[in-house]
Length: 413
Image (cartoon, rainbow, N blue to C red; front, side, top):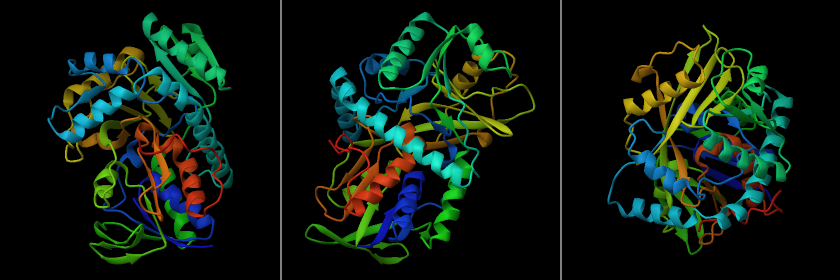
């Protein structure tokens, strides 16, 4: 049965959901509080990473995080606060950072990631207007200790059928011929890919318009009208919208919207930075993550995008911390000594929020409280990577058909 569906959120998860819903013949409306021209869906690294099958909540991450808190240039920071929401998130994250949680999560993340890559391949075959490329991903490391951790992770990935090469310095340089790489070694995940986030969002919007999807930007939710376990309509700053089903895909704002429905979700925004450098010098040609500083490096046609940091904060905190930005630049210089890069001015730096759950896993579920609400959020730094699969799964949930993969791990806990 075809339905009228409202998707709340115009980021990559919301638009991907709208795309697969419209493909199934549903009448879809997308609403978003912003102008839909910025945000994490546009400023991210553009990486499609089936290699990333270990959740953010894992053993050792708390210990490393505490060490980083005392380094103003580190890639991780929690803005101090006695806010109950933050304390609750930290307690749950700590509780989830164990090996059993990792073991339970890995197969589910792997299935979600590979479904997403397959769908990206289909979309690129249809019309590669968004620079989709499969060059893999280099996890570059400088120290033996970090190298041991990355190789251990690579062995887990191999066990789950992910193509991996372990490279020494010469092997790295064989692959990255465009610039000198100062690294002890690397793990090369051959299954990974990348694209231009801005062009992919443009492609999605164009496809949605072709399928007569209504898109309302600068439209904020005021309240919901409920009838027992059913959402009947939403009142917005631009009027009333009725629908048969509702999809919540509002990224870092999801928990605030859910609170209007009495649904609790432990989710906080993780602020990140990125900036683009034009190819006027020998910049990297292969996507990479500089492990010691958690800096992402993505070639995007005429530019290379550098991104990093994870600051657990609030959506009101849009401040760019220059020392953390300097930390990104210093890591780039350390790994790529031939690159002449000045610290960009604040005007040239993008900053935005990634929605981080306390389990380190995304949420893709039929609401337990409302029979016509699908919740789809919490993808953290993996939003772009997991978007098509998430959108397809959302469409299957709305259509009451069997989901392509088991989604039992992706529930609010």
